[in-house]
Image (cartoon, rainbow, N blue to C red; front, side, top):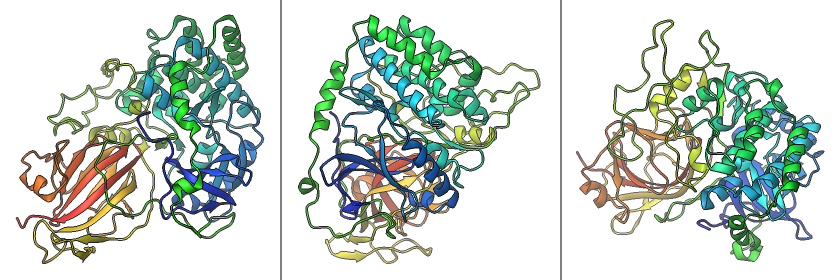
Length: 576
């Protein structure tokens, strides 16, 4: 395995939630943080604690309670059963049976597409799960590889119904959904009502991904993918021939023409019986071994804890704490990091499909940087003119993984999404303290906001503060002279995270791998990006200069379209 399966609890994590003792962190996503927990008898659970911005919304709580009640009626071997929840507590949470295995996204990223012998078992299991989910009146609405876990006895579908609750919040309310564009159905892209047929469409895309590691509608900019979903036929030439008829029917543009979950289950079960089905596939067997070593509280809780979060508690868990940063290999996101895409009813041209996006710009000078100025949103074509859509990007190499198929959006793409009526919204809050040292190692007070040149009177090169594992969501900013552990909504900070990009009011410079992340390294650097918006890769480190006179050294730990985790050190910048 390339990453740690279970992450130790942070010092500010609660010791218990609803009477269940926490053992470790499983990951974090667009809806909240996920913990590994245990019942008194030792049964392992996965507990998702909803983020504060969702918890503060009454309509979210109402829908969340409804979805929890419905989800508790879903009892199937191929779902992670909901065993407990507290929708009305200070911080709503949901507990499901823990599935000790990687997600389909992680499995493909680690070892490439699943072998053909495993695909009928995967498909039949997911189809049976959908059948049980749909019988209770739930539409999953966010079926994707990170929401399908691979256990030693078959797949498990998780997070069903939660997307509908999130639709009720101000973050997504204008007809929005939580979802991943590559797995959306055409009617979702258009903003129409979501029925069980959207899950069938996502099932076809998911099965194709499991077999090939690719999306049948290509990859790249999200509006290009969504255009192809609505307008173009899927590309199935890389898919095993036996699965093509099933996938093709699932991906029909008309929801009425798609097969039912019962039909899918019947076809895949017959295929499973008539072939030498193998489960788990050999690559997944290797990965499953890492999940067998479940941590005990003594291994992750290094000191006694008294904080708990029982049902109805009035205490909010924090989402990180300051600590010394480590500039090592990039960490991989775990347990799914759902992409949040919120949209209203898109403004469509007369033919009813999104306007095709422009062709890709030439490669920028540095990896991850946006295209040069002048290549943003093109002028609309004259009426009746043929506007070409972008070609499918080149096929990726085996094992590139689903995580890399999700959204990496440049500034021009964001503008196009807004034209189509798509608005990216999400939130994040956290807590932390600010302390730092100067060059002599003495503790210094952190700079506070209020204008001026950062830490006034400080010698250039003075280290003002360090922060580790800062969480930020798209549309939020941080101020280097503020408390970066508490991102703020909107513009105005020193660094903004926007749809996979970083934007600032100064200049950016990359730090080469192996170079120390210090003021001197940044000061000696002569390579800068002046566009004030760029798209960094996970594992990279950057010098971020601000107009306020501060220098931030930012190390990207994990990042997707909606969420980024990074380390930050703040220095007094050069006098000029």
